[in-house]
Length: 92
Image (cartoon, rainbow, N blue to C red; front, side, top):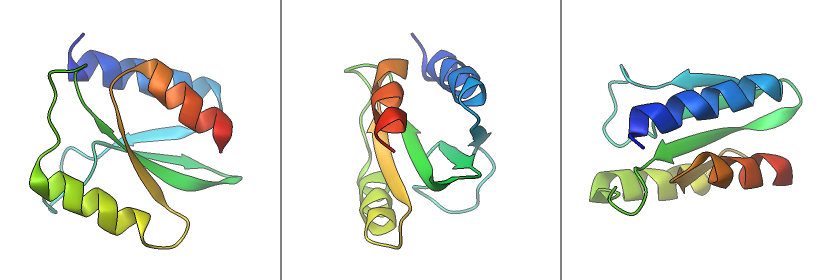
């Protein structure tokens, strides 16, 4: 499954759960995760979407995710499937 297909399925799932999934395609900062997820009653989540075992997190993405996770209540995760997202969303 391509990253675009995974992203679409994640956005559909989030919408059903009351979240807004906002693709960060046009972001001017290198390394920002692919998807910003917002919910009125929860802290924001970022998802860096990778294609199964083939997708590799770049050094700049890894550094950015670490930086995000060290700030406030916002968290960033690398996900490889909709199932990964379901586990994270249900925990939060």
